[in-house]
Length: 326
Image 1 (cartoon, rainbow, N blue to C red):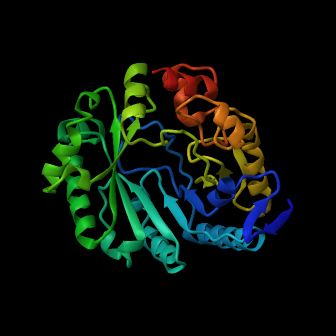
Image 2: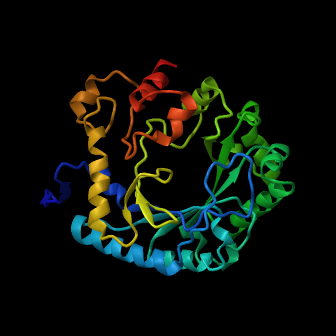
């Protein structure tokens, strides 16, 4: 791949700058096992575990390569499981990453409190998953786990961690989608509900109807974002590297040279560059496209964040058009 410097900006042949900049952020799942057995969990619970040594070695190689080849720096790492805090040496991994000036985001169920072992809370964001009020949350995750997570969130805030909530919307919690932020603020004794950073997720076990799923996607802060599109290199617990945290489409292995899986990652997005409803396309075609909701591009358009299954559509283009019709 040819790299050229022009007007002090990075130009990657046949590659948009937003794709290049995505290389500065990476997702890692060290394990799939968890201390809970949530009814709405849809991930496989394998016994694969990546060691701290494997993760740090991989990131060192990766970071050196993107800096040398693309003039980029690894800025952030998202860590998720399973439950990452079940790993006894997990806080040390976080501290090692922070020492490398990498911002860390941890997605957790908030039931195992090792937060005091993390040295620099300001550079570590904690995202705690909740399923709604106490009765609904505990029905899914087990009796007493709501109180554990609330205690965990309060402790994280006291220590100075940036804290966010991942609100899993199911058929049970959907009727409470508007009241839950206020309810949670009262439980946490916050002055304002908007003091909480809440991201809404629709469950992948498809308990919501099409209309409910569309309602959440269109009217609430969600992941993926309103314009869809989510491409980020992800290291999975089995050592596979994918272009999406939930995709099974392997681009390489942890032992591969970075140029191998990065090249495949960029190639996987070329299809989106020729799509009229993708923002990876040129500005002229986007300007001619009247759709309000477009797509940022997807490295695995056959999966597309699970919306094929949730909305019973045949293609990513059909999904985008469905959202625009609603």
